[in-house]
Length: 193
Image (cartoon, rainbow, N blue to C red; front, side, top):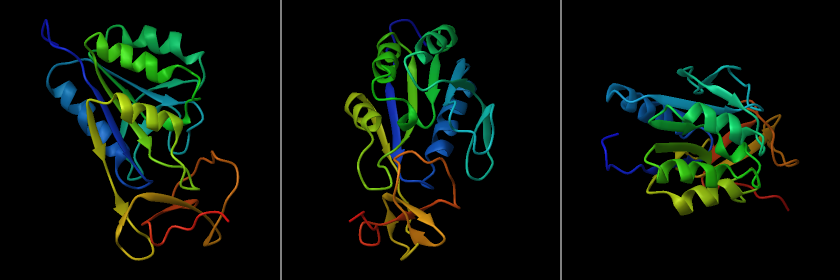
């Protein structure tokens, strides 16, 4: 970054299959093309496609640092972010809400680094994730993405958990892909009773 240039905090959010990770990778690659050094973090609990890369559902990857999801992640993230101009975090919703990750990332942005986070907007019951709400509230720029509803083709803003083709509810965090979730619009989304 040029001297005197301030950082920014960019939040990318939407339901499953809306292209959040693709947008995150695209923005970080733009930083690289501009000659800036990047660092990308992924939560240790998300090993769906790779244990060492952030990966889209379509298989596009970018190397990442795997970090724990609690407060113990902050020293690692601080150390690895020191020499970076831009910092990316994928699947921000998985970090514990009391981990201090949002405050840490906002501090990086305040110090002049560009921060990019990709995060689900809501859980499978339709409730917003706490880290997503916080990230939206401190963002300088928001990319609100939609997917295509698996039922009717409308713009989808919800992630429906499914099991054997039917809506399924249970614990809040279940890591999965197309076998476990589908995008739904508000009219087709089924909330728990």
